[in-house]
Length: 239
Image (tube, rainbow, N blue to C red; front, side, top):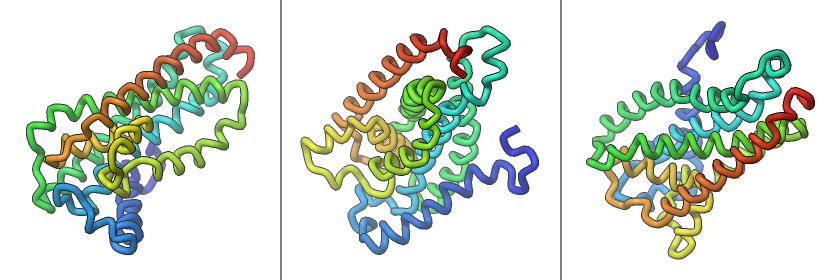
């Protein structure tokens, strides 16, 4: 239903990360010469596209879950049901786009001659970590958006800033320790690096940064769930 009455349909799920990849390849890969500093010999376009695949899933879940309660105001006022279903369904719906773009990513991997290693068994775990992170932030923002409608105006800025603070256009190996480990405070840093590692057969594992990212993601989710449940009884009155 998301692509009803659109000319390109589900192709939008592919177009957006593809053109971002082109822009990053020109400005970061060539002009900033990051292409020469790729770990494990990964081609820069493939490196960027892989990061954008999981980032697009996170960004979609975050933006949709933030607006989900206000967008379903009539339903919330008329029927009682666990409100958690609304932001959760908004995040899970993005898995369809993720699967579509993964097929394109696999085609790019074949083109560049990169094949997954045994680490691919961890891929569902990194997708789950992205779900937890997206839902955790979405719970915070959706509950806040009911009370303060200013929240929706911050989403564009937040996602843009967060994207550039995440190793999508550049590798985390540019950082030395202990900064690389603490970089994992950004939960999507571990998700993106782990997602690449599990898919592209890279030898460089995320390491301690992944543990920090997983802890940060869990913290955001638990506190977001607590705040959401605390505010849930006021949604029907304030929305």
